Amino acid sequence: MERFARGPVGLVVAIQVLVLTLLSGRYGFHRDELYFLAAGKRLDWGYVDQPPLTPLLARISTDVFGATPAGLRVAATLCAAATVILLALVAREFGGGRGAQVLTAVMTALAAFVVVDGHMLSTATVDMLVWSALGLVVLRLFRTGDGRWWLAIGAVVGIGMEGKWLVLLMVASIGLAVLAVGPRTVFRTGWLPAGILLALVLAAPALIWQAAHDFPLLTVASGISEDDGAENRILFVPMQLVYLSPMAVPVWIAGGLRLWRDPELRWARSLALAYPVLCVILLILGGKPYYSAPFLLLLAAAGAEPCLRWLDRTWRRALAVFLALVGAAMSLVVGLPVLPPTALAPVLAVNKEQGEQVGWPELASTVTRVWERIPAEQRATAVIFTRNYGQAGALEHYGLPAVHSGHMSYADWGPPPADAVGPVVVVGPYLPTWFTGCHEAAVHDHGLGVENEEQGVRISLCAGTSRPWSSLWGELRHYY
Image 1 (tube, rainbow, N blue to C red):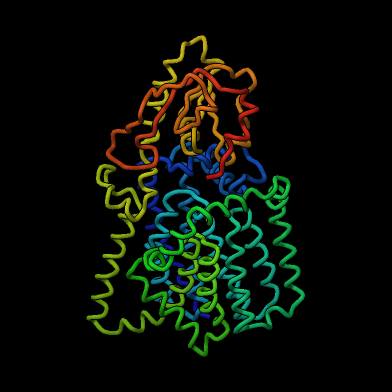
Image 2: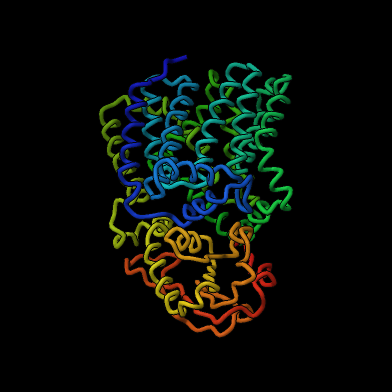
């Protein structure tokens, strides 16, 4: 086993952390981050669309570092840095020496998927780290044959399920691949049921919460497949080519071929098969293309060593450096807020999440102006009702009162109180059967020249509701 390249990998991580930290506050919160902030204030063992880990990280990060984009994103930066270290260790598992480990660290740090999810906190940020950790401990099991690694696998899976249940797809794809091509001997140990039990114990809080609430997470997942399944299937293959970088495609392909063909790595052969198995599962389910992106990092780690062998001539090194610089520039521009918001239009075609990080304070100002049209004596019984959790999270964060929404877990946080019988500021579309005496009070324009989901949203001022809030609430609840 090669020594871990602690120094140079540490330098890569230090540069990565510095860049992410310097740019973490340049735009603003993403809509999902505003939702995590709201959920973090209402800590629970589960939410309708996610387990509790990401809101918990949001709460801890903002409590320690401040309720700002930079403070919140410390958690995302640390997850990205840990992912780089884990992938360098994965390269070491494949027999990679100092050069392969450093190359893997650089590729991981600059991968578009890692840059995007390392910049802002999301469930995918946590999932990226979990899949990398799971890949490492699974490889340790395969290489050593030591059944005790099933305990580590169980721990990673159990913790991962507190962040996102997608880790089960990784487990399923690797399991099917092992049954097909081995090493099947890893299943013949008493440590396997111990690992399964540990995973269930760690995942139990989220599982029990979901069971007690009729598994709303499955309802959300089904809705994603139903609404976006066709588009996800069409985009699946093209997006696999860009999630790391188009320049990295030959590396992860070489990694897959190496795992399949190299007799010295026959113990890891199932990992090469597990990726296409995972892709087939996602295509059948209509899952989002980025769900498989963390697996590409594992294949790229396997491809680092043959990539270095290919770079044995000066012209090849020069070409590789040029392509690496182009790929790095693309990842940084697409994934990080390096451009002014007014120049984001081309970037949004590739990464629309950049646009969802601007305009929230301006939305709060627009809604505030509408709120102030309500006579002062009526505001104690007035309500602000939003169409989605991003709007609700933003308005709540920027200090507006009486903010409610029927979207996702905001619906669980309750309807307005029974004495909220006053006017209603409605942010977004509504049905006239819900509200009375409505007129359009504003059309939001953040003035930043960025086309995002909230630009142009209509804000209405209504005299009240057609029925009590408690009676309406079931109709106002929605998951999409």
